Structure formats: C-alpha cells, structure tokens
Image 1 (cartoon, rainbow, N blue to C red):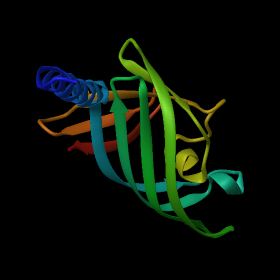
Image 2 (tube, rainbow, N blue to C red):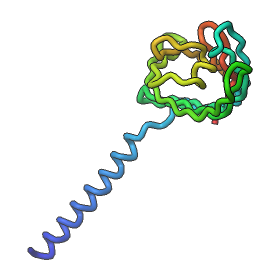
Image 3 (cartoon, rainbow, N blue to C red):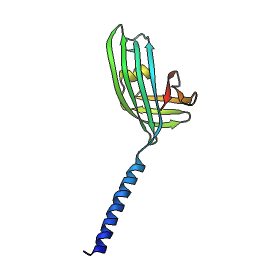
Image 4 (cartoon, rainbow, N blue to C red):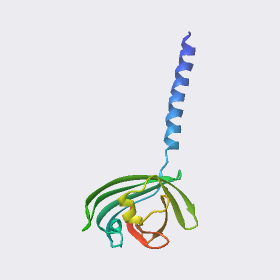
Length: 151
C-alpha cells in the first residue's frame, strides 16, 4: 500500500469516527420540560389505602421523543398503615392533546397514587401552566397536583 493510499484510509477512518460522534450527539433527546417540587400530601378517604399523609420530593421530565420519567422520594404514613418510604422512578410515554399531556405510566405505585389519586389503567392527564419566569402549576382536569420550579 502506498503512502497516498494510507493517508486516504486514515482520513476516511477519522471522517467516519467524527460522523458517528456527531450523529450520536444529535440524536440524544434534550428535555422539553423539567421541573422539581416538594409536595405535601394529605388525603383522607374512606378506604385505608387513600389515607395518606407525608412529603414527597418530585422531579418531572418530559423529552421531545414523547417519553419522560417521574422521580419521587419521601415518606407517607397513615394511622391505619405503617410508615412507607417512597423511592419511585416511573417511566412514561406521553402525547399532547390540546392543553393537556396524556401520560401512559409504566407502573402504578403508592407514591403515584398519592400524587394523582387512583390512576385508571395507568393513565394520567396533566396541564402545565406557567405562573412566573420559573414556576409552573401542574394540574389534572380535576385538581391542582403541585407547583414546581423549572431547572
């Protein structure tokens, strides 16, 4: 192999590596919306599993790819139930329907039920309303779920 051919092969290899890195960088999904909140939960219901009292730290992330996740940590308690530590990561897919985002959650957890109420078929609908430069109200069609700060 001549020296000229070696340079062509080297240049082609470098071009392929740079192209691969650039393509990988561009296909990563940047967050469309992210926010964090501390939610104080106080629900009293007829059923013992709806009787919850506690504090949850929540982080919500929506990505442009139609996927997102919700991180929840904290503790919940009730006189009828034992003290429960919450450490949940719930992935979901979403679609925008008018002013609402329809979330299809991968699983239902005690933390999710305390925030959204009883979920039907693992689905929830939320609306994001900007209050000021960094704060948003996240609400369902029925109630306000939390106020969060965008990172």
